[in-house]
Image 1 (tube, rainbow, N blue to C red):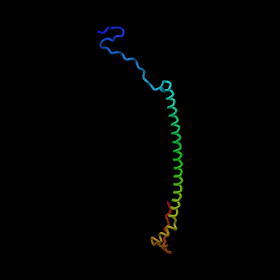
Image 2 (image 1 turned 180 degrees about the vertical axis):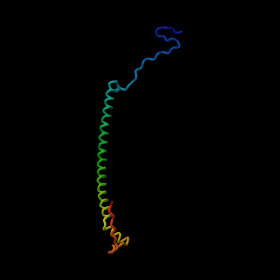
Image 3 (image 1 turned 60 degrees about the horizontal axis):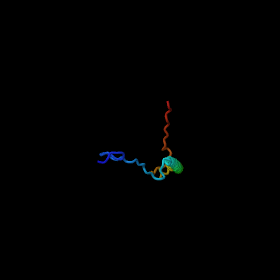
Image 4 (image 1 turned 90 degrees about the vertical axis):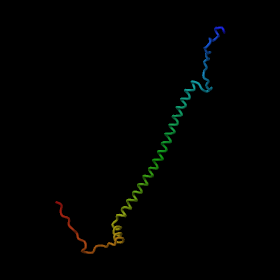
Length: 120
């Protein structure tokens, strides 16, 4: 039996493991954690500013496109009103009545005017 003494380990017990500090890369330290956090925050702010600028430019292009669409629709509306006026003109209606429908102007005595009774 081995002697029980200062350096001997009793039977059935394991030898305690020495405390090992984790091995970190040379650039990693507690001081660098703050620096990295600050750098990440600055990067996030910079990305936010860039995104906001890109979004504003995109909205500017969309506004310009919508203004072009609006002016095109206004011009189209003007043209349609002009065409509507032309289609409703009495000269055109009379021409269609004479050529397509075979109508003629009434002769004297064919038109009878009926008087409206007065409103009571």
